[in-house]
Image (cartoon, rainbow over all chains, first blue to last red; front, side, top):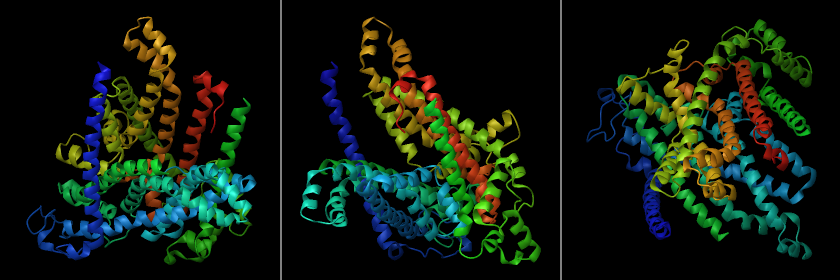
Length: 282
Length: 316
C-alpha cells in the first residue's frame, strides 16, 4: 500500500514546492526591480511630509497609508528597497573576500598558521549572535557603514571555516600536484585553480547566508545602530512606526516588517533550490 | 576526566581572550581612550578626566590595565556607570533576574514545543502533517524576531487586549503573564532548528535494528516511540536545545527593545546610545560568559546522560 502511495505523494510535493519556488522568484524579481528603479517609480518623495495626512489609512493617493509624519508608506518602502538589499550584498562580498582568503590560506599552509586561524575563528564564535557587531558599533559609533563592516567581520570566520573544509579536499586532488610539478606557484594555483573550483559550492552557501544577513542588518537598523533617519531602510521604518502601534496604527510598522519577512522567506525558498543545483553541478 | 579538564581549560582560554577583546576594544577607537570613554565633549572637565583615568588605570601599561579590570570583574566590580552614576554591578543586579526569567521561560516553551513538534513530524514522517510542521517552523524562522514581536504586540496586546503592551510586570504570576509574548517571540524563531534535529535523529533511529526488534516483539507503537526511538535521540536533541538556549541570551537584545523590558539586552542598547562604555563591557562579558557556561556545561554533562558518547569521544 505504502509502496503504491509514495510516488504519487512525491510528485505532488514537488509540484507545490515548484509553485512556491516560482512565486518566490517572481517576488524577488519584483523586489530587485523596485531596488533598481525605486526612486523613479515611487509616486511620492521618501521625505515628503504632509501634516494633513498623518497616520492615514490606505487610499488611492496613499496605497499603504502614511506614517507619523504623513509620509507615503508605499513610496518609502519602494525607495528603501535599494538600501535594504545593497547592505547585505556588500557585507557578504566583503566577508567572502576575507573569509575565502583566510580559508584557502589556512588550508594551503596547514601547520601552525592553520591552528592560529582556527583559534581566531573559535574566539569569534564565542560571541553569540550580534554581540561582536554590537561591540564594534559601541567603539566606532553608529551608522550603516560601520554596521556593514562589523557584520562582514562577524561573518568572515563562518565563511573561512566553510572554505577551509572545501579547500582541504580540493588541495588533495591530483591536479594540484600536477600544477606544482609544472612549476606553478602556490598563490597561482590557489587563485587560478582552487578558488574557481570552490565557487559553485561557495555561491550556494552565500545565497543561504543572504537571508540571515538581511535579517541581522535589519535588526541592527531597528535597534538604531545601522541606517539613520531620514533613510527609509526597512528596519529603521519598523522602528519609527512602532510608536503608532499603541494608538492602533499598525501599517507604518507592519508594512516594512512584512516586507523584510517576505524577502527573507523568498530568498530562503529560492536559495535552497539554487544551492542544490550549484552543488549538483560542482 | 581528562576530557573535562581539557574542555574547562579551553573554555578558560577562550574566556580570557574574549574578555581581553571586550576590554581592549576601546583602544581601537580613534583618538585618546579618555576622549572615547567620556564621549560627549561637554563633559571634558579635569575632574572627569581624572576619575576616568583612575577607573581604568590609564596611566599604567595596557596589560596591567586589563589585569585591574579583569580582576575587578571577577569580584563583581565593573566600575562606575558614566550615565547612571552608580556601580555597574548594581544596575546589572536589578536587570539580570528579568532577562534570566525571560530566557528560562522562552527555553521552556521552545524545548517543549520544539521537541513535541519534532516527535510528531517524525512519527508522521512523509505525511502531510510532517510537511506542515517542517514548512511552518521553517517559515517562522525566516521572520526576524523584532518583526514577529511587533506583530504580536499589535495583534494580542493592542487589538485583542489579551496581554500588556510593554514591561516585565512585578514578581510571580504577574511576571509570567507579562513575559508571555516576549518569551513566545524568542522561542518561535528557534522552534524550527529544535524540531528539525528531533525529527532527524528520530527518523534515523526508526530504521535501526533494535527498533525493528522491539516492533517484532509486538510492542505498542506508542511505547516504541517513547522507549526506543525518543530515548536514543536525546543526545543530539539536548545538545541542540542547549546551543539554542545559549544563543537566546544574546537574542534578548532585540526582543527586550520591542517589548520595553528593562533587562540586560535593552541595557546594552541604552548603554551604546548614551555612550556608557563600562556598562557595555559588563553586559557583553555577562552574555559571553553565560553563553560559554551553558555550552560547556552541556558538553560536560552529556557523557553522563548518554554513556555511548564517552566511548566514541566527542568531536568538537
